Image 1 (cartoon, rainbow, N blue to C red):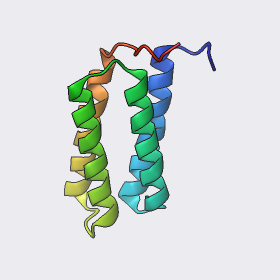
Image 2 (cartoon, helix red, strand yellow):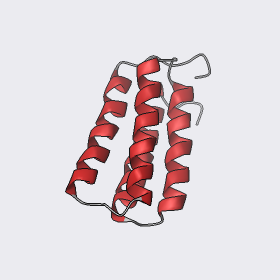
Image 3 (cartoon, rainbow, N blue to C red):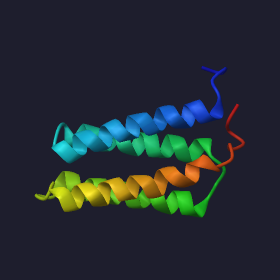
Image 4 (cartoon, one colour):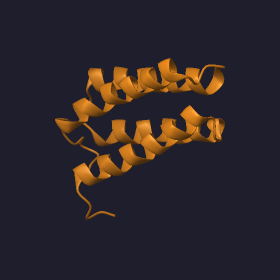
Length: 103
């Protein structure tokens, strides 16, 4: 995997995050999906140069996902909040720079 590009590594992690969020939204295996989500968020944070905005968006996305997973409401409003939190996390990644840990 050393030959994959930075953007493809981020895209791969985002794909896993999107699948986890969809499963959380539908109530499928929420505890394991929360673990997957957290691991992927941390992976992305390690890939990109430190950015307080991305870190805050990551925390917000996990918080919203946890509320959806643990709460009784999986309706439209919560789905919208989850989607908006994902966009706030994803969008700044378009201009994020690789961290020093990226090879």
